[in-house]
Length: 165
Image (cartoon, rainbow, N blue to C red):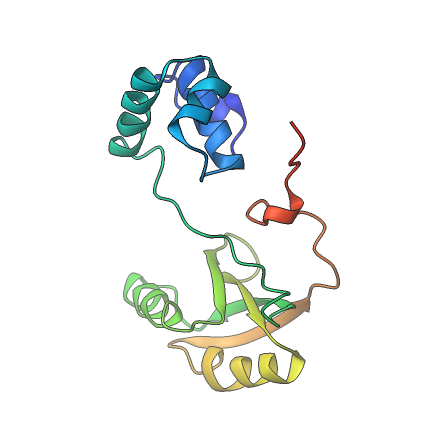
């Protein structure tokens, strides 16, 4: 969740409280949300609808526990392209979106072009994804892998949030 100074300046303290509360628990009822932010139900619901309509809230989803699902191997692949013209970037972007093991893909300004977060069940599966899928993406010149040994902070993980209030 962005810090308060990064949230749109057209938001007041109630809007910010709503966003912070929902970032912690997106399943809370309007009644609970209204109590938490200091509003009655109707104004709280109207603000929530506006925040959704204006794009401050993109949606709601279940945050799955990847370890419980047997997907606790996390690797970060640095990808260098042979060509960084717009057509090459577009081709790479579209192709990488089709690889389900790639959780995140970021274009980077630095010594490589993209940083991919890849989640698999083990190193053997990662090796297969890297060799058969990522290395075959359009315009890939080289890759370099860093394997995560432990996740210290993950904003989206329910277990990393402070649930005491």
